[in-house]
Length: 138
Image (cartoon, rainbow, N blue to C red; front, side, top):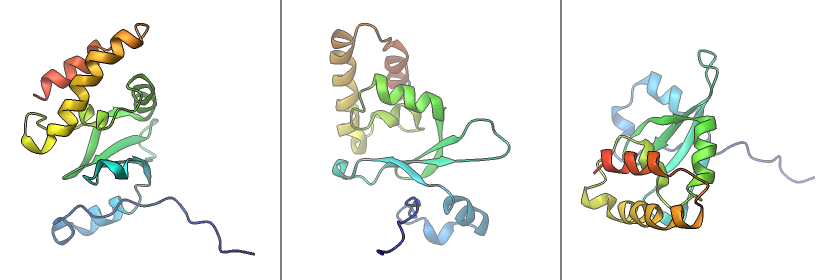
């Protein structure tokens, strides 16, 4: 028999944040299994899932340069993943970020291109909410 399968990968500490975390934050972050990541993007961004007895729907947390709950629930995340065709960086549309900043240039370009192309390819989907979210973050 081989080794037991590993459990879900847990969220690592963001760069430069480990020393400033409280015990409560460390405990919280140790219980956030990674559900979505794209290592090829090169920026270390990923999404985690937070289950809570206080909420009927799991929370999505997005980790980029900081950790924070995303402005989307689990069902919404799965829907958006499908509609955006998982274009690299789409999750930034649900994070508290300034996409006009230079460090988000690649993600901004991906979002602009996605919103130019996908509505033509998939007219059955409504991309207006995604365009509005992009505009709010520029």
